[in-house]
Length: 215
Image (cartoon, rainbow, N blue to C red):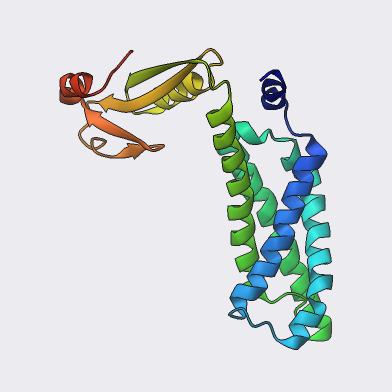
């Protein structure tokens, strides 16, 4: 148990984060080629694919290093981290596009087809965000599983409600289960906020009877 707690308290080293990101980008460019050619890559494109993968990985690694995306703590990934990843990936894809234009001007050949650059950007973004969300969810699930568990209703499905929810989820001593959000704005009722349903204030009594609400 002590060993498990030590592992959960540690953050993955930045070099390992960078390796994760580079591996995902290598997989993404390969996937982009497969999707572009309906999983039947022409021989001429297949021959240069290893060189393209190396080229993409080098550019991505440089942009990741400059953008410091590898220094972000995966289990605390938030909106600002997502925007940084988006921007860094966009810069890398923009570089691919510029190199393509220069290459076509002098050799009449695109180093990487433009459609593949777009597909690669989308797949890379989804891949990088997925690994971060996955690690974040796993951390929340296994962090101190023996701690006291409380069912909670949060009043207010706005910005403050979200801040409160995140603060409760990170509490090391108690595991809060957010059963529902309660709000009095009609346009929010029935919708979901991070997987938690938003209910009308009139639902409080029935919710208290149907669930074992602690707070």
